[in-house]
Image 1 (cartoon, rainbow, N blue to C red):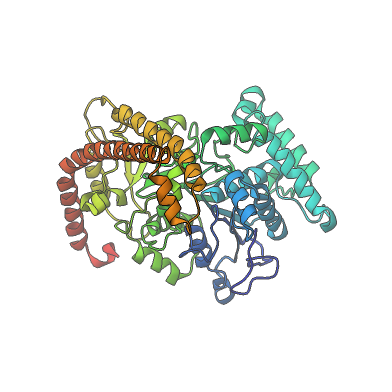
Image 2 (image 1 turned 135 degrees about the horizontal axis):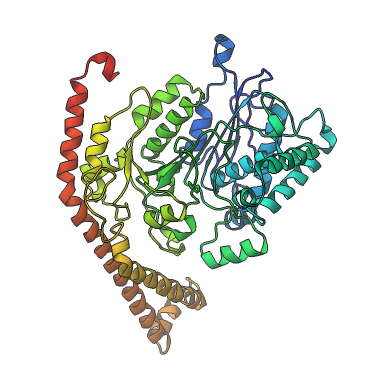
Length: 543
């Protein structure tokens, strides 16, 4: 839902409005269970708060800006609704339609649209971008306010049927001439009552200037893949097309390297046939919320936020200078890397992210890894040594006026991997360390299945014991047959599974440490030389 409160928002939700033409419209959607007041806020909320909505009032040369924030699915105050929202994506379509409705109220031809989202909020804004492309933006001059809600529902139903169930845009292009597709698209948008403007919105096709997302995950977030597949079969909520629309000028995706929950496997954009300048999908150190934000110790997530803000600035979005500077100066890749499977999170299916398979599946020829990943590796922070980095990648930096380090430094880092983007070595035996440890990964999955299979009856048996006040009776039953035997069996199974999982973790960590230890000193030298080089630059060049 669009939340209320703070900084002069109207009762309709957290929004800032302006009726001047040529404004920037920013729509933000947060992840599951995230609200504006959780911990220190996600990157989506931080970005939303940092948008400069007042500057144009004092400087007429500045572009007016208006922003909306939606706190995502699974944020209801009612526990059952919150649980359903988190597991089944309940509220997903409502969030898309709410943001779309707000866009209808403020959009005018010539405006610029920016979309931001994290986790399932990223899935939400990607669905929103598809809805905009499919139906256009409804024209309030053609659609009465009284029937607007019904018309939005009709648009969503038509889009969902196309996006989640039927033929993809790529298949349509194969089977139809572009001229016929354009005519069909225009006719469909006109039937919806969309804005048609010969200069800014030809055929009702709206250009989206920027889509920025952190670690996109699907609308349905069940801990078991089979349940998610079953639900998607009953009520499809997964895109049939992952290729970004040609009407999106710039698309940026910040991705987590270290999250090992199968449920949180990211939904990447398919880069087949996409211009290199249109899409950037960059991998960052940390688990899901280390990249998208939300933890109390949040400096690690600011690295990905700084990169995203820099990319959005290059597309014309403006931030409050103090907030922008805060993000830049407080980012720290050496901050705490959290355990995403702590507590009850242990029941999420374990599976390290296979970057090679993910990139191959989405036609990404050369994965992009942010330079901060290698800063953490070089420093040895928390014994950081990712096992799933591909042997072939490109190192990228944050592109702003203070861009660091130089291209030569990036290339030097790539050469530390035997088969990096600028290496002359032959093809590797395996495309990543993780690929070479497939047997160990299978063993880890088996230990997870054993843990789940053993823990469920163990919990039932534990609850069948007498309540806490009857401690004496409970102890007596523990010492009697057969409870003593049952308890001993569960204790042995628990120790076995614990030792099994520790052995898997140890083998994987040992392989990763051995690999990166041989390169850590060289990385430190590269970063040290880069700092010396930067310090020797003239002041106006280093600034």
